[in-house]
Image (cartoon, rainbow, N blue to C red; front, side, top):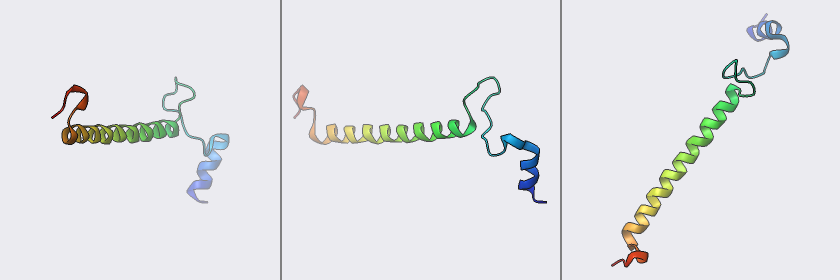
Length: 69
């Protein structure tokens, strides 16, 4: 018997379900935590690139709202 079949028999109804991050925190599974980390990482990189883009724009074209050169 393969390992997957043995695991399926031992877990029963819970086979294939993601386990919770903490036992006392219902509703938050490890899959949801991984998706949240991936989304927040992507958002952080977008923010970094946006800030760099804004900095380059201000650096090259000056600040017209404060009387740039």
